[in-house]
Image 1: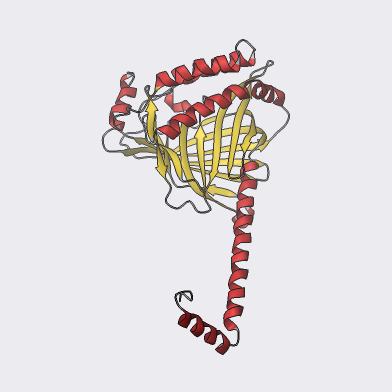
Image 2: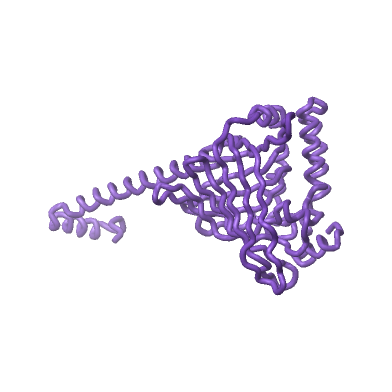
Length: 345
């Protein structure tokens, strides 16, 4: 009932309150209390989510384990299990409360260690849209219909070009903080993109969970063929573990980042501009985009060694990005066909 429409309704409302002996007032107080409790609960949940995301920063011994399980194509032979690992640092490079960015840097090599800029994960609370992979080295920004209480994760590759994104909810049931998104497409991992051409994308569920020793990235992957009618080739499970570990040359990674972070901030801004101005965009090359990322990594190395200024290197990098990006992406069958033929699209 709207008590503000006329005086009669106000009078009736007043009599009703008196007749109920103040019950309406008590109910209003209870409602306010419930709202406050819900607000506190939402605030506590938000802080628990943030704590989980920030817990992924640190120094780690990492192990990557990929196992193909169930074939769906006739005569397909399950490929050998793939193990790899190494040492990695993960640093918070931005935290504005509702947005957190984590940069991964590998530390590799024998007696002389060197850094390798690895992937980046950006987390956005209650986003209005999420950048998703649509196959054939192309992406689109998809509006979010119901993002209440959810976080998007967008993953970027070594040159800060996008890889894939999804939106999901952090849960903290049974004392385990875990982010659980639905399946979304992602590009081929490098281990396959450089060795095989029998599928085009991975339909992946990427769950992140915090463990007593660090965290784990669990994957439920379906390798899919996108030419013609999309179809599944084989399923794969993956467990990537990040265990806290400090007994390696951590400074190698931190020193690299300190020397190049200005350059990489400019690269991120350039990709953000492309994402913001173009609801759909892609690369002019298919398969593993080495022609794009190698020049940019080399420019970063030149900055690290003081052979180029960050500004000069950034201008060269922007030209490389412009050369290999396009908004004229065609359809996915055309794009993946270009990969098979080895042609630029």
